[in-house]
Length: 122
Image (cartoon, rainbow, N blue to C red; front, side, top):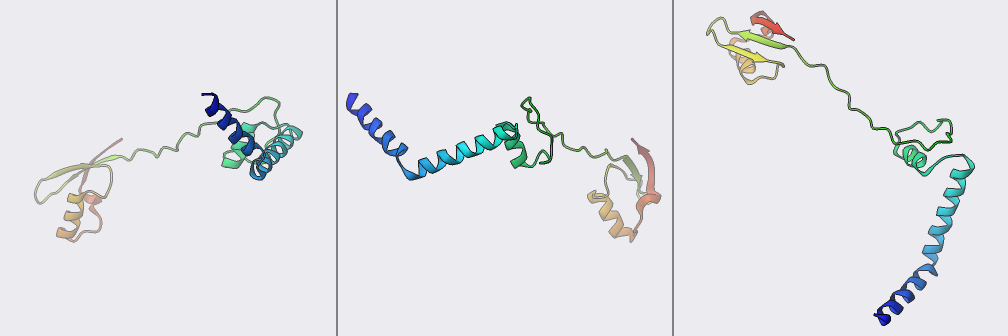
């Protein structure tokens, strides 16, 4: 175990003395100093980089919490009841992409099936 610990310690020392590690640490310190100078938190930086918050937001003393965006909900379409006067067949649909409606349009060569609407529900 002591040999493994010594080996890990040597690997850690080699990593800390590498140029890439030193460069990363210098960058991290520079970013933290910039955030401190402008009164921003790491969470503010993440929000700005993610594009959730406009970059001209005033600096706040209290760290901001990430705001969850609620997806925009589309208004529900009205339920339309169509009745084919030739066959008596009834269809209930909320959109014009219904397969039977398409078949009716093709079969009866109609562009507007709104004349066949019997009822509209919210």
